[in-house]
Length: 370
Image (cartoon, rainbow, N blue to C red; front, side):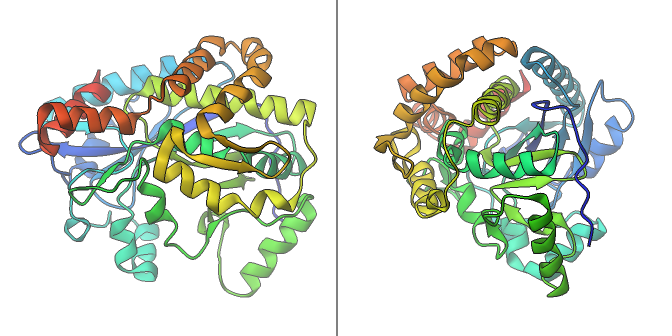
């Protein structure tokens, strides 16, 4: 089998944002995805709006960008248009990794062939998959570079989980996790991490075997935390909750871009399968404790908090970020880490102030809609 990797410009970036559609009565999820998609078809200022697995979700796909400012400008213009159309429908749009009090059994599968097939295959897990993530794409020149980045970035995934965490509430309760969304993703049998291979030829052979076994039909069947996207010429970071604002989504993409540039240009550490020995432990720490999580670096630094790890990383990548026009975005990332601030904390603080999850979602939607 040939799985051609389409070369793209190194360190170009793009994002996908899965969004919540909520009513303006009690701010529970609503089933208005098809109507919103119909209203904006062919009218978006840039990018694309797509359906997702259930009818309470839509997904923004950005254009390809090279500079943080261009990405955030596009996301703001798309947000403004979607917010305008949603208000006309008496619907609100919110970020966040999980709706705080919706019931998964009330969800409806979006009537597209792929989603219906997923529902047939995975049963109730499909409706539970009404969770909302940000995916970050980074351009790579070839498949070998893409695999290098997948492995090199694996040790930094706790940072992205903790920075983006915005799903502390699930099914009406405080989960005690900053990110509960990834627990839902982990239930799928093809979640986890990319196999530890280093050449695109070896990766092609792996995918071919999985297809021969009848386990997968395409790359879309792998729900890995980071995966190559050969048809785009990118690697895709998939661990982030959808942030509460598009501005933060752009900051996270800029952070990933600068980090990828540092890793691929300077190759600061030799890749080792040891990174995967502690991967699940570190991932749990990030989901459970956010920026206060305590992770272990198997490549030599021992234990440190995720906030400390981010601040150390910022020192390494600052030059790359400045060259890419992302200096201010990376400064905001550093300040968030130093102050222990993420969206999960904002949501908990907001609930304490307003006293109900319904009002929390109302303010959460107002924040996203600008």
